[in-house]
Length: 326
Image 1: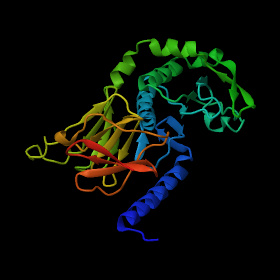
Image 2 (image 1 turned 90 degrees about the vertical axis):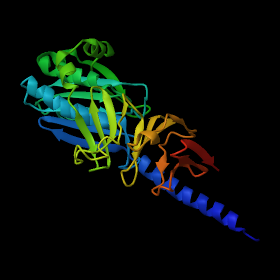
Image 3 (image 1 turned 180 degrees about the horizontal axis):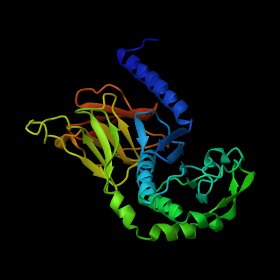
């Protein structure tokens, strides 16, 4: 059989894409866990969304913001004991079940071991805010933190027993809060929360003239770090910001020179800090629930995205055009 040069290219392309896609699936099947400490505040975050350190969902960033601002809340309210904030974005056996637990005198981990059919014994210290939900609003969780600190002596009286399924047929009896109580708390105005959400929170800083992410007043801000440039530098005002109230996930390029920001599963925005390069929302076809992957090399004004071994996309930055290659 005679194999033409074109056929060789196509064959190698599919082998390469299959290898990359298979590798990404292996990492994606492992839950992503992030544990951090902010003064007296401890946070635990677990998500099924795990596509490497360069691909981050907004829900992960939200936990950093919540941790940092909860430290501020604790300080302003004079609370110095441990505040544990646990969050998992998925319930493997009942995707529709949300779980909220505001608990006093117990900052022991609970969410991480529920799916093992275990409830750890209380450590009789601090308080906790525990959440199982696919998405959250930052201000809502901050209100739960404020409420829990101010009403800590009454928290445990508001817990009721519910069934939590940790497998298809196995369940645990867990003390949790009603949805009505949670909604009652988050619907109330809070002057303290209104005050502190104006604080700027830096979430990612890749260095001078590299990309940066911060959060301020309920907006994520994607930008280029120009802090080290002098005011009279011609490039000081060359770069622009991209602001968004929420997004699905972003991909940081290998050299941290640009972002691919997925507003949702099927649209993205290209952003490198240069105004004329910032794209509108680009529609892109999606065949599965996995995040897109970005080829490491930038081909001139083009980048390559893929999510299956069957095809890939070439995006032209200057022309703002997306082409599907099968």
